[in-house]
Image (tube, one colour):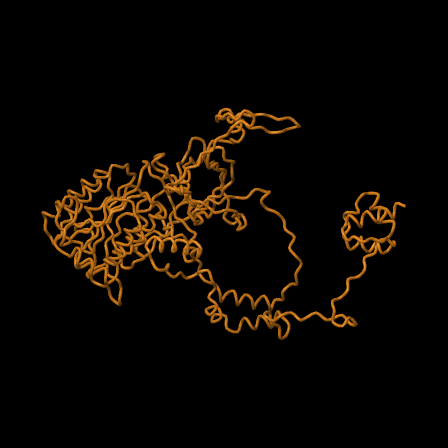
Length: 604
């Protein structure tokens, strides 16, 4: 069974599947780019060259790292160059453009300078194209890693080339490259090939099959045999490789007594938000860390965490509890999933979806055999069109929830790149209190002719929805402004608001349907944009405003208000009218003065 690949977070409201690495530390990525003359040949119909596409992908990764994980290390190295630039200049025809370091605005500007026609001229002037020795390039990359003293959780090297035989059949250089690639893989470096289109096709098996790393597990995308033709394909493959994987939780799915499957819960989509602001010290511009301390209200002494207790008032008594007792009250059971049974898919309704679903996938490293049993369960649920009903406790001290495990089969595109991963979608089911009966407002019922006409309109406006097709305009503009500020741009890049309706396209699709629907629903000559008709003037007032009717109150009701002390609830207009009614003279207009005058009159 093939595991999922990660999608890209483009700050549009959607994030991708994520898993976890065993070691902690920073991620590192080295771009090893072929700088031969073949890489600079432009494609047909004005398509960008392979070198230009590679630089666009490198820039995209740089900006993504700055936003999402700025502490990761990235390097850019060219091989097959005429000029040489590397530590101690030990290797010829290898040009280290960027050392392994954190990405920044200056590096993005450097990569921008290599894009387009001017970028190709600058690359030819700065580096040029010369002989190729992939073994020396890999050796130089190994030295970049050895010079880093930080702890790295992931070491990845990506080779971008359109030549399947970089040494032209030189067996000595081929053997040297294979040896150095083997040395790199032994030190924990993962080598990936991002091969690009060339005339006659790209034969991976001739040389690079021995260079690249085999998939570590089924989560890896593996070696793609088809070369990348378009920029989108190249970006998709790079993102699937370089992005980190993080699991929300790892649990045991209990299928019965003594039968446990290790599974991981992954977030398939998370709302993209702006990053939280960082407080800086105004004199040094360094980040400020906040610390909270609790003091005794009477003595002012510092309280330790063990001295802080929680209390609950019950039956007019304050019950004091320790923190361990509170945790024990909250704990229902240990984290995990417990299979209750199976139900037909027809039993799962649309209104049962009350929060974003998560994704379930086996964790073979935790319990051996989990992938096999999980695959069998997924296959049977798909064949019988049923979902698994489970009780889920995601984390310790979390309340239990009932969830539905909906099977999902794997889907791949023409390039054998995974579109939909195989596994279970976890649907959180509502409790009885979450579903309420609403009293809908009474509205006129549409006729069948009106309903049929609206069906025509809806059918004309239907389109296939994709969440990644609509970006959040606020977040996009926010990051464009930051990018323009960091790169010293005159103005941020123009942004198209994709959530605004395309009025011209909608009008073209609907044609006369809108007018026909309006004729069926609204009265003749109805115009929703016209202003409402002016109010009629009251006869005999000379065009003045209509007078308000007098508000009179019986004496018995007024005395009852006085006895109950509720005269203050009456309005000033009612009190004034009551004073006139009972002949009370008053010079004041405040409510309290009117109340005092009425009380004196009615009490006498």
